[in-house]
Length: 260
Image (tube, rainbow, N blue to C red):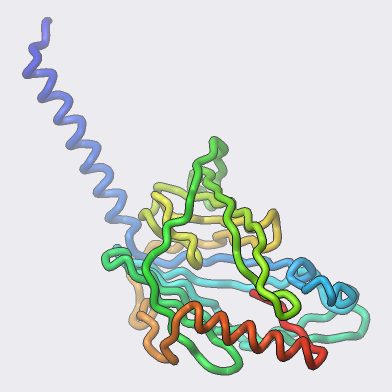
């Protein structure tokens, strides 16, 4: 039987509508919930070069847990803090204590605004900014995380850090794995500008690694996703200047700070 052009158009249109309906059902199931990430930081690689001798005194890795609460257009990434102080033992009788900063990163994709709550020296600071889209490139590799099929994306950029009281620029390599089975533009920290949910991030080949350990699509509870509002408002440049000055002061007095 010969199919007319008009009938072909109707069949194609029906196919498109069925696809859109299936996508709508999928999004309806995954636009709200919480993703729990485990973050592993290589403390030895975070030490300033002049304090390399400290490697014998502190363990190489520190691990912490963070939650990403999200709905259709908002998300907030914040630590799961059971104890605001972490004790690390070097195994040689030396015990060091690390204060766990209660930092939060809020994103509203409808307004394209972010609010970063940064805790520093016992005070909270609020930094409001616009969403910054990273220069992502898409790889060909795939990976499964918690049953979700993920695609590779990556980029290289430069970040400024304070070293010996001087601001220097370092290259940063970022590799992420994202899935389109959850809502787009979602991810831990600032890694939320991909067309899917980011379930893993590797910075500088193991210097800092974030991997989703649990995904719980569910209605959010009261106060789980609240825009940060308490703290001193400042800019990113002003906050960085304050931190750099404190690090310079600490180094002058023989101390040091491991950057996050």
